[in-house]
Length: 120
Image 1 (cartoon, rainbow, N blue to C red):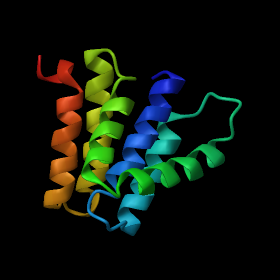
Image 2: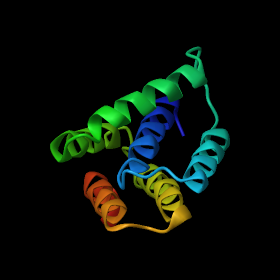
Image 3: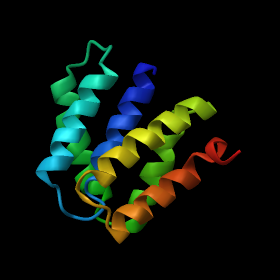
């Protein structure tokens, strides 16, 4: 996974846990595990990026239109079918960590729509 893809994935993950307006300890642990597993290859400090990612997610989660636009914007980093499948798999793992809600299922559906190569 490229660094821009990692950053987009982390932004999608932070947004995904705001989908149901409830951040569980399980989701936090899974998110931390994903950050560790995907690595980091940037001069920009990972901790600062994560803090900013949560701030962006909080802002985008305030309206459905903002969330939809942000999902589509960040999904553009995944240009291949394999990258799109990997991103969906990581997000799905986080969402099912504490039981999926209708809001989380809607978020996931929007993400699937934003990653068209997965369905092909």
